[in-house]
Image 1 (tube, rainbow over the protein chains, first blue to last red):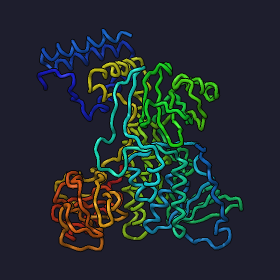
Image 2 (cartoon, each protein chain N blue to C red):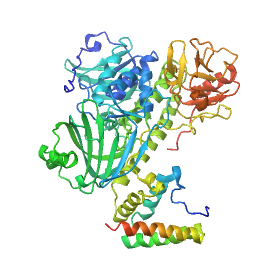
Image 3 (cartoon, each protein chain N blue to C red):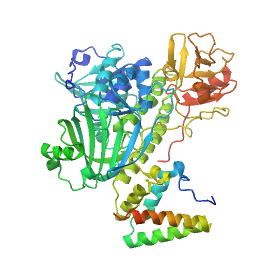
Image 4 (cartoon, each protein chain N blue to C red):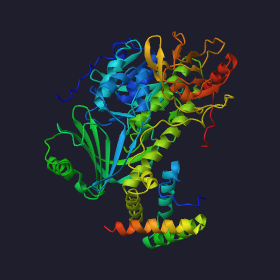
Amino acid sequence: MTKVFDPNADHLGKYQDDFYEALMASHEGLSHDQSNRLNARLVLIMANQIGDIDVLKSILSTAGKDSERGSS
Amino acid sequence: MPRYEYPAFDYVTPPELLGVGDAVHPVAIVGAGPIGLSMAIDLAMKGIRSVVLDDNNVVSVGSRAICWAKRSLEIFDRLGVGKRMLEQGVTWKVGRLFHRTDEVCSFDLLPEEGHTYPAFINLQQYYVEQYLVERAQEFPDFIDLRFKNKVVDHKDEGDHVAVSLETPDGPYSLKAEYMIACDGARSPTRQRMKLPFEGQTFEEKFLIIDVEMQDSPFGGETAERWFWFEPDFHNGQSALLHKQPDNIYRIDFQLQPDADEAEEKKEENIARRLKAMVGDKPFTLDWMSIYRFTCAKLDRFVHNRVLFVGDSAHVVSPFGARGGNGGVHDVDNLGWKLAAVLKGEADADLLETYNSERSHGSAENIMNSSRATNFMTPKSPMERLFRDEVLKLANDMPFARRLINSGRLSVPCSLSDYLPDTQSDKSTVQLGAPIIDAPLHGAQGETSLIEILKDRFTLVSFGTKPDFESNSVDQIVVAKAGTTLDEQTFADISGLAFKRYGEGLSYLFRPDGHVAAVYQTPDHKRIEAAIHANLHYHPQQAAE
């Protein structure tokens, strides 16, 4: 697992579509509330997998910036 | 620019109705679309006669399939129409993605040099069919084109198929050793056999139009594939733009699932959508249709003496151009196998490899087309949320750009898991991979790898000629610049052939260009064994 967060890196590579399809499938049939809960669990589990607090803080900051700007 | 004029092909009274027909035709091909015609030409080039049966006598009305991918063009080159298509078609390789009014990113489908054919050309299906008909007419002893010969019934008699037809001169029947159903997405052959054809149908409707406009709606003259998510001009839906020859533009508008088709087809409503997109440019509507897309395939493409090829076997949504191109790959795969079976070089089990290999290829096409269509038509608020955030993240983060899916464009599948073991050595291009083109210099001048491989198993040695002769394989040597050239020896002036294939390796290509074996030091025993293995390979039948 990488110890530095690089917003330009593409770790999914050729598995981009496999991942996206699996992510959508994991939400299939769930209510919006259930989907939100699933997303929360995903964030927590992925955070544990990443582990590195500096990387996590960088990700939180990057993702948060985007949501402020994209308020449309 | 004059509009395309649809040529009408002559109906000729079939010989059976004059009492002089063949007792049993080797092959009957149902459908004279691009796939049926390609099939007939492929077989003719291998010395196999066929009769092509079509209920109509004109080429496809409307553009329909327009995007022909590189590998298909290479196959069309082998069939003798590739150059003509390239000359008439609109060449493109860049796809550009927009979200709302902003460009998000672009992708280049063929960034490297040294290929005879481009990533894509756009060419209306009617041109392709016309070129194929004219090419087929160059084989009068091998291809019997029968227009206005409508197949109304068929019966597999075990060792042949009995086909019943209707013509302007009345009904008749004929017999064929094999019948190939190239009769399209609604295949009457498939329906007659009551074969299940199920898959995913997408709720959204799509309005597909071809419009003639003198002014390009693209910024410049270079044709590209432009795709919009939620453009301002088309309220929250997606849109796709392609350029075709004769100043005709293909535009796909995504519509709501409950869109009123009759209303949407009204010219004033199309004009309104178009005006919102391109402004007040004058246009003429050339063709239009409203579709609801389905991705589906047959369980099996081979049913004893009846073979399914193209849309009759599998259908996809158009995002990725995997429909017509997938059908061309079917033809390429089946042609040499059926020819080998009919010549007695292989037994009928070889056709089972057509079934397994093209089932695999079409499943890959369906997977990619379904994913793209799912991405552009989110089924739930959460799917839409993810889609929207991917599009926003794509402004700053490269990984998100690659998650955007407006269509993963047609590339041939690898057959690495489907080939017999040929005890091959480690190679640069993997076993089962489709041929990769490279420019070559021959005794007759400039050529390329895809242009010199013809219809037979061919051993291409990159470096020096192996020290053996064999009647069962064509041999080609790709040597360094400066070598004396002859009919079998070509020079790698650019160095790209050695770079792509690796110096010192000999590749055995199947007649359809897939890599069947690779050796450092081939000898006739290994080569003949590898060809034998490929002609007599019996893939495990899937458990019923």
